[in-house]
Image 1 (cartoon, rainbow, N blue to C red):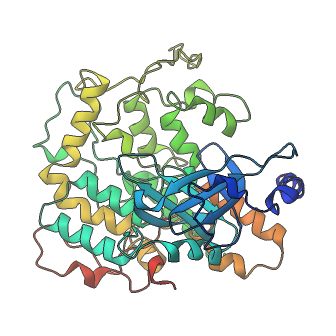
Image 2 (tube, rainbow, N blue to C red):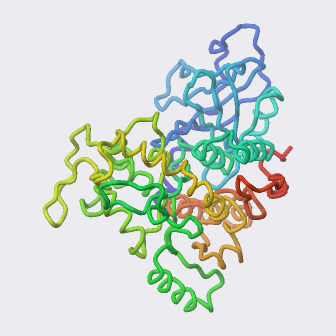
Length: 441
């Protein structure tokens, strides 16, 4: 209730700034004319939302931040040339389907604009040229799948494409890209990628990797027979807290914001890969997967080293939490990521990867199939914009969005049938859902 009251107070404070006419002096060319009205939206980053308003012309998309301190001059607008836009993706604003991510050329960072309503987002989408691809379009999924099938996409690139198509973005910690935990051996001095024993079973969700723990989850599910929405797992495989668990050393300000200005207890921090994998195998409250940084050989390794010398404390056994303790087979953080990537691209992982895709993006991600695959989560993780529309009050909608985004949200379903392997001579399009985000008009 406090969060909702604070949000209402901010909205009232911003009202005069958001209703102010767009400052035409911000136009890059005086010959430009607006193709939209002032559209209320926010510029979203993982740490904050900058409230303001957007306006589109035939040449530019503008975002003018709202001034917190009222003055005579409007805030200077940011702008992105439509000629520089190489792609888009429909994204979520909480649970509402009303955001757009804009991808720019020359490796410029993408931009996430969260609009208040679906129609405002669509007005901007309609202005963009027809040849600008949409990553949440089923054609994008079909093309990526067919390229992967014939070996023209690495596993890393394909999983990244699927995450993007399923609504995941680096700008939103509640919908962060998801990658599988691939390796199960964090004790050996050498990593033998020819041995099947080295790999995690990708046909099972993390919660089902340990038979004894799965038995506990199944017994608990049976005890919920009188509940309307029973579940196996009370936590999710991807949530803001889990993302920041991994990124504590590279994004400490984000963790401090999430934890009300404090770091978590040292024993609950990411300090050892062996301990992390052990936890996701035996801890009933831990079923998290990994994030792309574990496999991205070009992104660096700052999330593994305490370069800022953060005071993270000591564990109960007196061990200092500093750099992440890597497995013996990793000579360095760079080598660790390199070998993770090699494992991800290995023949063994490639063979089993479709089964993991079925669990996260496909036919076993929801409903009765998810239950049969031991992949059923709390109802909150399946909430969407259609559920919000059925609710009676703004307070109920606000609380639901807050709970869902904190708990973790299942990605959009991309495939309706089992994902074929690279060796199958099947038309991947047969497995793609008919309805996707870019089918809206």
